[in-house]
Amino acid sequence: MDADLERLIRLQQIDSAAEAARRRIADHPSLVRSLDARLASATAALDDARAKLTDNQAARRAVEKDLAAIQSRLSKFKDQLMEVKTNKEYTAMQKEIEAAQNEVRRLEDLILERMLRHDELAGAQKAAEDRLAADKAAIAAERTQIEEETARLEREVAQAASARARLVTEISPGVLSTYETVRERRGTAVVEIRSGYCTACHVRIRPQVANELRRNEIIYQCDSCRRILYFPPLGPASAEEPAGAGR
Image 1 (cartoon, rainbow, N blue to C red):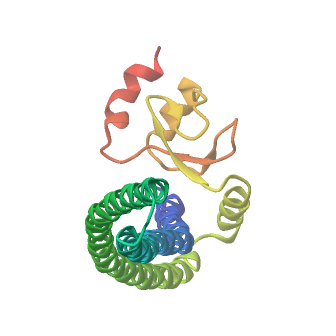
Image 2 (cartoon, rainbow, N blue to C red; image 1 turned 180 degrees about the horizontal axis):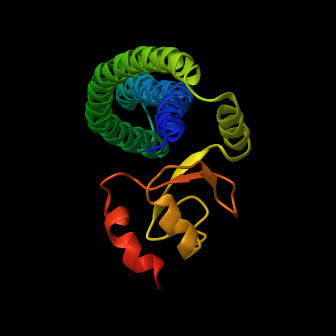
């Protein structure tokens, strides 16, 4: 294999790995934001559960206050019933007592509903507390994993930069210039030939050119995308290319 071509292949591998690492690092802030959103959602759910339980307790106390007032009135009505002098007054007082008793039953039923609702809301609050605790633990672990991955990828990027700096000194200036120009325009500058096609733009390589390129002894650019082409050593495309090139 041509020495410059071999070095270009290695350079492309280094650049591709570094770019993948940089893209992954760039994704990390959005991953952290999603973790923050999960935590905020779980916290909001707990706050909502607590607020509902507090509202229920306040509503129950208000009903209990109303019930105490009605019971006090009912007690007075019963005392007054013993003091009435006419049937008309007696009938009127009986109606007052009956209305108060109905209101007592209504308020007692409402208190019972509030008590049952309290149990339901207390359970919901406990579940929200458990979910928040679990989410906090999971999010902390994921955050640590992201931080560790960021540090590892940053080391890989630094190592790639060091390896790249050494490698480019070994490549012929003209060849390196071609590589950098194509990489700037296309993102990827060196690609394989497989089954007689450029694996980047998928344009078929002319059979006579493919036969010449099989030995990887020259720097050749795809006629369509201008990327530098090579046959992967010992790859399946190398073995099948002679038959494919003749078709």
